[in-house]
Amino acid sequence: MNVQILTLCDAATVDAGGKLNILGAFDSIFALQEPIVHTSCVLAVKMRFDQIEEGDKTVKIMFVDHDGKEVFPSQTLNVSVKMPPNSRSGTVQIVATIQQLQLPHFVLVGSLPLFATRIVRQSS
Image (cartoon, rainbow, N blue to C red; front, side, top):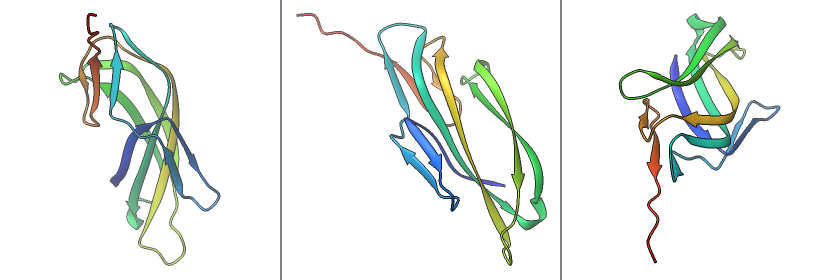
């Protein structure tokens, strides 16, 4: 398996032809204080599998900090890997909506990366 796309975004869909459509990809969340809350976002993933990997798979999505500590509840998804006719590989697209993403601290999250950065207000 090869992860070809892995991004947080504002919205994503998979059309009838299997194309992954991504709108507003981002890698930073800005906030004034902790905990950092992002009201709604989508995790968009495209994975390519070789023919030998065809079948049902379980994918676990986790948000962890640089120490490997989970900072948001994980999601487990079941996907079915199917090969197109006369093909040596196939793709699976995942569109996972995340409501109320809450990060406890200003941290770099995982290997995505997602930067949670403090906004500093200018004094007037």
